[in-house]
Length: 183
Image 1 (tube, rainbow, N blue to C red):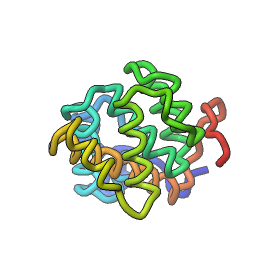
Image 2: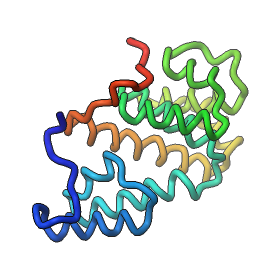
Image 3: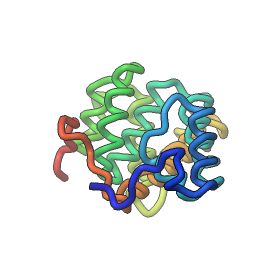
């Protein structure tokens, strides 16, 4: 059971939280966790929701690339709830099962497309190593430009934040979730 209830636009919650809820509902189709929990932060939660929305849907990355980047980030954080949702979204957007499997198992990248391997390698270095190598940095810069480099970095980073919100709330994955492979 999560540590805090998911807020609603009702008298049981502060006006600041309720205002954030109304903002998110007006600007997004849904308000899943962690966005729902972030409404406790009021305006900051609403702005963070806007950032997530922008990074998911309004960048130079394809939907499949964005979802692969998200899956790479949330796998790094072992965020089962977000993993389950974004594996489904990724497959629907055209992310290949082989790439999802490589992310989940920390498997080799040799049999993936160049773009898949590059996104995963960049995420592994960004989120799990002490630095992004010059080779990986230059490859991402060459393939995606300065804009794409920053979009990938921000997208993966905001999903790490989302994962930490769910971690502190102890928000479980659904019982029928696609499990993460144990490390």
